[in-house]
Length: 407
Image (tube, rainbow, N blue to C red; front, side, top):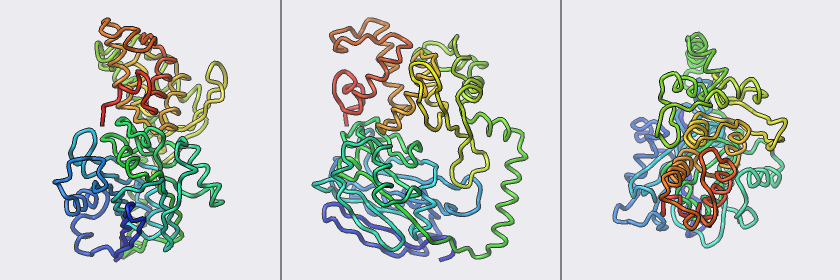
């Protein structure tokens, strides 16, 4: 099958069993990959009479896109879907970039279907034709970055691609995310909580194969043309330099920057957290997802002050608009630290910032008090309170433990 890798991995965690089956050509032609594969497989394989999202019978699919691993521009994204979301009770999916999906395709696979639940923590290791479930007891309870580092050290391979949940997913926190490449998040819907209920800590993959194309020369010609077209677009230079943080300035001009939990569209300190501050004061270099000419992400470094030494990748508008203007925080170093903390704990910045902004709004209106928050003041702009709440949300302890939607 030219274009597709041609195999799907089926994992039954209850039986600690892994099976590899060929990809059906008619199915592939009809649904292509990514979200198409994910939606159709969940529709076909899931029993809708199963109502509990944390039932072993709930299904999770990880599906690569048809263009993953090729020269096609911006072709690094993949989809994770869950048959029954702990947040909505319905089908839910999300997607992320990075390089995990191309590596899965290089190993020879188009998708993973995960069912069952293990009595002990496990991770899935994939290296070309070798696929096995491995004891993950030493990884359980570890933060995302630490677990990723440990797996790379265990296999002596710094290029190992790791998809993992953090403490938030392990504790079935509804605001959790699934992280690959340290910072690329699949979030929304509580997919990570379902993986936590199944005791699947991570998927680690390494591939040495290639994508077989029907007409490689023609494909390369079209891919190069598309790369050139993207680079010639009027938005390219600005988006490439600043990324999604440019939305701070755009929404500021429109009077639509979410501020103080949407009580207003004006944040008077927006210039302290906009794209120019990120790029001019903290960005060290640009980063890109696999095959993407836009390279809109940033590797950042805080050199001085309270958060000196903070390094990471990102950050996106969702952090600046969520924990920034929406929660009243005007310190870029604090937001960079908060962004890292969410990635390390495996927390979705969108859902978490929305919950914390709501709590601050309720505190402002004196609906919440010190007794409710266990002695914590929730003033607008208090990044220390946000940091404490995020740790509580991941562990589901304290006041932060009740902020996330109860699965």
